[in-house]
Image 1 (tube, one colour):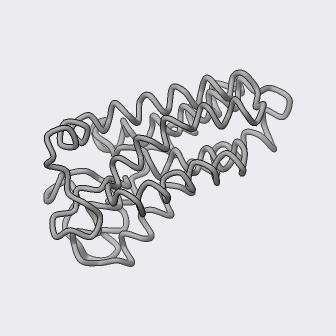
Image 2 (cartoon, one colour; image 1 turned 135 degrees about the vertical axis):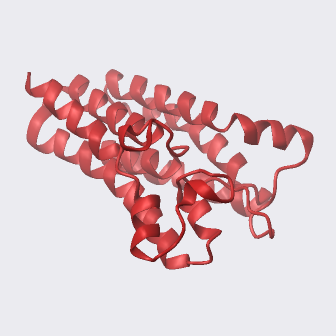
Image 3 (cartoon, helix red, strand yellow; image 1 turned 90 degrees about the horizontal axis):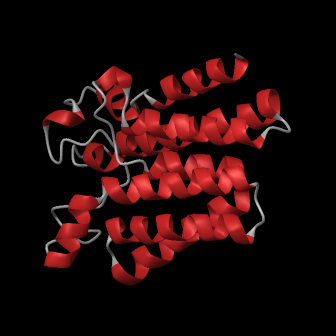
Length: 204
């Protein structure tokens, strides 16, 4: 019963949209009404308020980290399956938030927060992969896709619990699926690069 309660709470935490909250706090338009319509940090950045975008990014990552950290240290302890379920719940909450009619962001920041909580080295490796790809190719979406693809590999190499490896794999596949439009743009050569006027990089 406690497991179910914690999983539900993790989902509800994941459903909290920092893009919407920060936009309201800074007096900005709802991020779902302009740009890509995506409630994430990149779309908030289109408003011109870098502080709002930065806080959105930090908030989305923090909710993933907090949910998993609490599960590991105060609820699950020696139950890796519970931690895996919580990790998936908070991630799914961001992708399909009940408070936004199940239309959420793409999950990059929240996934990073989850990975850092599961294992700090895995999280850092995934971030380093994203950063390397971003610097070399200047496509944020491509960087996110490659980082997502490597996450389960890092989890396996680090010898994490089997349940955590599967959870990481599921998150990676969902993140890649959420970037399907970016994949089409990359193939067609239409994806905007980091720093271009029309930023299509997805950090949400």
